[in-house]
Length: 351
Length: 183
Image (cartoon, rainbow over the protein chains, first blue to last red):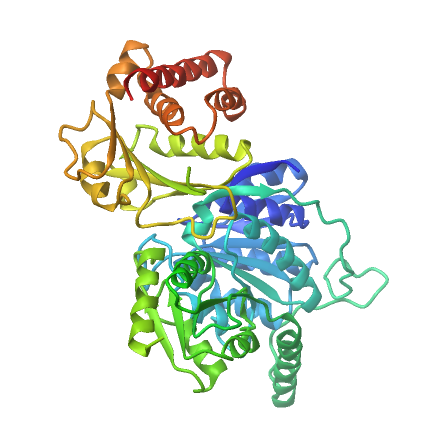
């Protein structure tokens, strides 16, 4: 099959279109803007809707409206833009509407910079807005996965009636890699809850206000029962050389590939290193972490942040194995410096 | 040839540095290799140096990033100052001598010099610098056969006018010829 060279942002946008997404609502921001640009070019040609909204708030509320009708819709932004969207994401989560939200993430806090970063991990995995809720969070690691995960995201979103977030560091938006083009999705699930016009049936109402005590509690229980099912079914991670690993490195997104190279080099130097790469950031693949801990003397979380995922690793290990951290922000750690860190820890631990 | 090669292209905005890397990436993918192209973006886009890193491999690419590429194509002086120390020991350094007024400090590198702007002026295609150097680089390294690359240029430039494609092919061949004679 023919391979096509595509930027990650374009691959993601094309993946969403292949998945049947026909509504894109966004506001441009580096390094995610190519997604909006791609959609602006493509949507009018395929009977879809592209709106450059007046603000991020408007864009996420257009997604709220579009998703209410049962259409496959999405928005994409970068870190400061995602902060602005949080109110809408909370509402969409409570209303249990499927949609795709993309964060091509950059460094913060505040306006921060435009360098790739993973420092929105807490925001992405803990809900992000107000109230008790989660979104499913997928972390691709290359252009092909930018396409594939966009398609997968819409399936998961429909299956569980939940917003799905793709969190991809800025590098993944800009990197060009060969893509195997996927077939368009043709089968879609029924959405009997959608507001599609109520002639001949009772009206469907999308509402997030629950003033009664019992009603509010029961809504939260309903949501959490759903989150429990998602936790049981959807935790995903890749493991590399963890069977006999004494140092297990954990990294997601583009970092997981950079770490993989460092792990390969560490093995050449006789250090038993391995890698766990969380594919879902929520639900966090804690069982994969525990499985990899079998022979581990030490875990190392490598992140483009000041250290956020490390907390989930520590929760998963519950004190059984110590967890170290290596991270940078403004720069992406390179394989050479990660190798150096692995060798430093191996020497310290006498491995 | 190593099973995996990482080449850095660096210069200032407008020299076609990013597209030079993209051409190589396209051509290598067409030749059946695994490839990735990572641009630098940020403050560097606004007047300073622009660069991109191309990885070409016989197998799946793990890290598309590196601190130490095995080769660098340097189009201006600030890029040499910034990247000379980062090239792998015994690596290759291609220098646009029209724009770089010093010699490299390291003595372990395989240095290939080329007056790219002068050649571009000679063939009457000032914007062809990136194709000239790409032609020379492929002729020297053999990452992809020159004939194969030349055929594929038509695909890369799909949608452009015939004369633009021909100009770029001519620039590419001028680079090939320079490398044949001088390197």
